[in-house]
Image 1 (cartoon, rainbow over the protein chains, first blue to last red):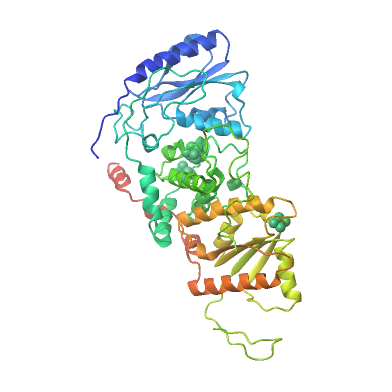
Image 2 (image 1 turned 90 degrees about the vertical axis):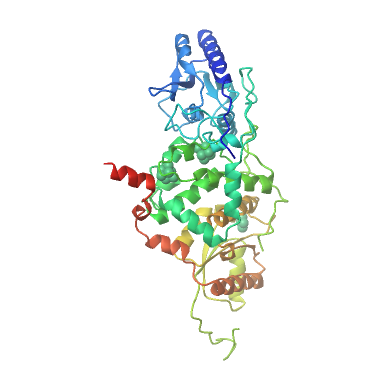
Length: 307
Length: 174
Ligand code: SF4
Ligand code: SF4
Ligand code: FES
């Protein structure tokens, strides 16, 4: 497929709408802070910001470089963000799925949040060159398969509608390619990928669902997962990570974006999401559910694999 | 085929070139009691199985299966009470989902699922336990040793693979 441009002209109007709304809710003291995006130093780049004064609302923006899933700032893992009173947060559809999941897991309460949803045409896959125009090549693969361009159930959503064309589903294609291989070939593929891991745990740090205060993978009495960045421990880490996120992952692909070793981490999470959909007709992130697919059961569940 | 010679009390053991290590994670109330029944009824089954007893299948974390393979198991059996018979009411229903999903993950990573067996074996099913262990042992024996995880454990560092064109270019430009 040739490289198609993607229209992001609505982002300036969306930025203005976000600013106006943030200013209003801060001025009316509906919220104590707003978590959003602002421009960073390099041309075209963006970074997260927490604002507490109505006058700072003008700093907020939305652009193709607004890649971060800000939901992570609301979890227990980010103790430095004070969570007094209601907090406003700018969310793309994928980020909202993470918040929905966190609400289901009793980590957040809806009434403590003021959700500013972004009608999203897509963001960049890599912000190494933040001023890159959004095209079918530069767009994040997660955005090509997004099913939540217009976030649902927010307190405020700017009125613009994104017009992103149908794009190639890179994750789905890659999962299908791997599924068609023999177990031996798949092992060889993952062995190479996992061997690159340096156990920096950036993927864990950025994930809204990795909020445990003590991760199983850090424990050493008993040690379930070897902690050194050697192939054996890496493989165990990736399998445990995928398992612990099964049925929870919002598909924000932040883990994959931050991985310095370019490991296609989200493939594992998406494969699990696909299996959970097939097995239990469960999809994460659309509605707040107090039981996930792996914390509930039905008597009629498939047991064809059990003798 | 296993040829049985000698008295039935002490059948002569067939010599195989490969004796697989099978780890069985079992719940104490049903499968463990079933295995016990097989023993007290003097039923014969391969001595390749190492039984680890848990309060319930709900207590069997998928990471245990991973650990077993890493520590040298060639096959893993997970077994507990039949649906409806769990002594904690729903432990095995939860376990059933967890293992259904975990199998899919292992399969995607490239583990041959023939090395992993799940079963429901009640306290009265000594015969079924014998069948489960015998089947898995023979299947795994035919497959040969599970080398994947063992090879990983022997490999040292990732540095061998860190020769991407970008890194080489960066290195050369220093
Ligand atoms: S971010 Fe990448 S290198 Fe770091 S621990 Fe995760 S997978 Fe490994
Ligand atoms: S596992 Fe990755 S894609 Fe899933 S919620 Fe965590 S950071 Fe996002
Ligand atoms: S007690 Fe046997 S499976 Fe729960």
